[in-house]
Amino acid sequence: MEDFEYLNSINQDLMGMTEFTPEPKILVIGLLPAGAYRIGLFKEYDTVSEDFLAIRDFDLAQYDIIFVFDEVHYNEVVVKLNNYVSAGGNLALATTLLPESPQVEYGYRDVRFLFEECGYRTEYGISGITTIEVEKPNTLDLEFSYVDSSFQSATFEVTQNPDYFEPIGKYYLGGMEYTDGYPSFLYRENPGHGWILYNGYVRYDHSHEQAMLIWNTFFRAFALHLLNKPECISTEEQKGTLITPAVIGEDELLIGMVNDTVAKTFTYTLSLDRFGFSDGTYFVYLWDGMQFYGEFTSSEGNLLFPVDLLPNDVKLFLVSDHLLGIDVDDVTKAEFFLFQNYPNPFYSGTWIPYSIEDAHKEERVIIKIYDITGRIVRELNLGKQGSGTYISKDRAAYWDGRSSYYREVASGVYFYKLIIGDQSRTRKMVLLR
Image 1: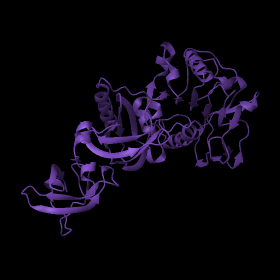
Image 2: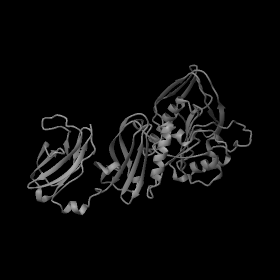
Image 3: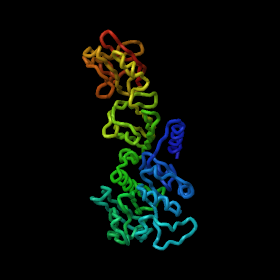
Image 4: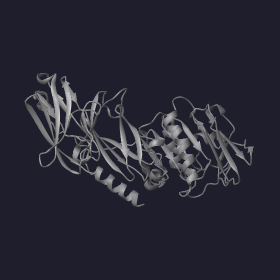
């Protein structure tokens, strides 16, 4: 709970920014925000209670996928979700189904989901040794095997329109295949409608880690492989990390990342098309101190860059199509320019970016590192270089934090000087051991 409270405080700070307007494409019904975060399935999401959705007008069309994790009690909610699917929205359900002849009581629905018109619930509350086997090929491109000694499941018997259904996996009780219904299936009436994924293998339980494993497996395959929504759902490498991008200016994006208790290294994919940005070269900064992180070129509407997160880490990345804190005209007019090193402060090594204009092309480039007393610690002889920008990690100069004798230098403030011909530029950096 403490992790969630910290996460919520970060979210409130971001929402306080007048131009920070995240627009998650995932809606979660039936879980509190802390519960949705604990599942580890979503990069970003909105949550709403069933009670709220039943009595309020709510624009469901803004979401690509809606996930329902608890029993639906209200007719109004079912009607809204049916209309959403009929309009092309996609729905994932981990909830119970109506029996063949439901008794209408207060708070209990009698309106059916679209697929429930084609059959009825056959089982619920099964216990014993049970096995789930999912083999390829299937529409979800999923392969999965699971055994549990105590199980709960709601299976569905199809009585009409079987072409609308695709069962996902087989279900075994005590080694015998269960054939009286589908415990999990895909449903779609026609190409103009959205998909419904029903997963009745495990009833919702906050403490049931096995349930979360199954939901993660089925729902991740649904979102990533069938619907191709990588901007919404975490990959296995990103599981447990919230990632929220939002436009904060005409040509700038802010990406917030909040990690769980497990360190992670992955390549993040930012969908530029989603925000109306075109392919090109982008400059990424760490918001803390506006440290330059790297220069990256997008392809086919996606910008990729590497991310390292420590346990309980929080990072804010600023993505811009131009260099920040620097007048681009000044850089263009200057014969050469020295940028701030990155990362800064640094722990072992750092990149030193710079640019060279035509007037100094093919001149020898040298970077000298000084300690705070003015003593030269290291000299980087970069040779003759042509005009251009040397910003990305594969082009910028690199200092490994060692002296000319290749010994690690102590923590402290250092200065680096770029020398080209008889001119130079100097900046400051900080090394932390």
